[in-house]
Amino acid sequence: MRRQHIYRGLIQLTYTAFAGLVVFFLVDWLTNMPYAVRLCAWVAALVYGIVWFIRKPLRASRQPVDVQQIGLLIEQRFPELHSRMISTLQFQSEDGVGKAMSVDLVEGVLDQTFHQLPNIKMDSIVDMAALKRGLKYLGISILLIGAAGGIGQAYFGAFIQRLVMPSAEYPTKTQIMEVNAPEVIPIDTPFSMHIRAGGRIPRVGHVEVRNEEGFTSNIELSLDKGANDLFTVEMPGLSEAVTYTVYLGDARHGPVSLNPVARPHIKTLTLEVVPPAYTGEPREQLQTGSARVIYGSVLTLRIEPTQRLKTLELVSSDDSKELPTMTRTDNGAWETTLSARNSLVYTVAMVAETGLSNATLPHYRITVRPDKAPVIRITKPSLVNELAAISKLPLAFEVTDDFQLGAVTIFYEILQSSLLGEENDKPRQGTVFKRIPVTGKKLQFNGFWDNAIAQPEPGQQIRVWIEAQDKCVDGAHLTRSNDFTVTVITAQEYRTMLVQRLQETVDPAAELILDVRSSKRKLQKIDKQ
Image (cartoon, rainbow, N blue to C red; front, top):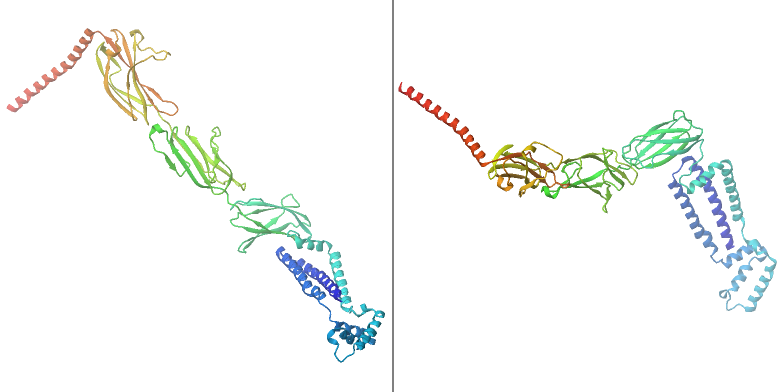
């Protein structure tokens, strides 16, 4: 009898599951339930069935059967044991034997009752009506399952797949074979989707786009020119996450999520400029990639992007210029160091780990200010001079540099008079007349040229020039002044020349005095009148 509870429970659970499966199939086919609803429904039904079986049939099968109830069932099935079975079972318990009742009488009743039992089929007392009714319902449910599977084999098979697979769909006359959308979609950038269909292909369809707030828009879908199964739809730029669903004939694909991704761009850019030490210029830290720098400056460029990058490159507008490689630091920034030798225009090309590159390439300009050579300006003496062998000549000049002077030297070379004015390819073999200590970027010299140092002889000529160097990082720039010459004459010749110069100075002065006296007399005559 206890096994009957198990049998009836299993049969009832089976036909209920079969019938529920058919109903679930019809509802899902008509409404196309979302996968989450389908999953929750069949999991809930499975859990409910297990709990029901444990709490009812299984628990009932484990409950002890009341002996009096068994006696009643036996007496009901076999009338000849009426009023005997219950009494006998009662006598079998200790509480059923009274003090006034004979033990022999009880044993006699027991022997008489159980003597008849071997001739009786005890299994026949079990009520099989409920079991038979359950088998009938089970048969009906099996027929329903068979009919659903036979009539709509493809649909029912798809339904079974839809119970566990979120992407399973019911077969349609139109099949959406393939939908190709970009793997990564940049924000606010239009893109194309390509859809390949099969089966009965209509000429038009639409794509429904829905945002997170529920607003929808439809984009028309039409066959490509010259194609019979390919559709292309131009999607607008997306600024937020959306889902799209493709409707084509009786087929539907989706909803599929699209999450636009921001392109990489520069979050912060810092350009540190360290001028050459000799210039005395301070270092600068600029928040831009453009700068005007001194030749030889060391530039450190640091770029912090808005997202992790796969590569970051500096690209010169002049393909012939090769720029240094950017390297990623531990904090995610990128940096490189370069020496300013030539002006350049460059851009920053970034590729994020998503594969997207920066849409606009900012242009930056590094303008290199060259370190010019020193400038020498001689104010004294004139280019051609005559001087005695032991005489001096005033010498004054000014040397300027844009940053820092390195050395200033006065050279001379004694020539024969026949070589004066001639130039040749041989390097000058000048002798140092004087090395002038310099500091800063400007020098003013006021002194004398002294023939006694050079010790020339009369008839010789001395070529004198000045050389100045700066402290450029790539090697000092050398500037050589124009030459001035000193012709060495004898002392007598030099004395005669000085007298002539004095006479040339005195004669005009005497004439001026006479003119002044004449003018004075004329004024006196005018006053007397």
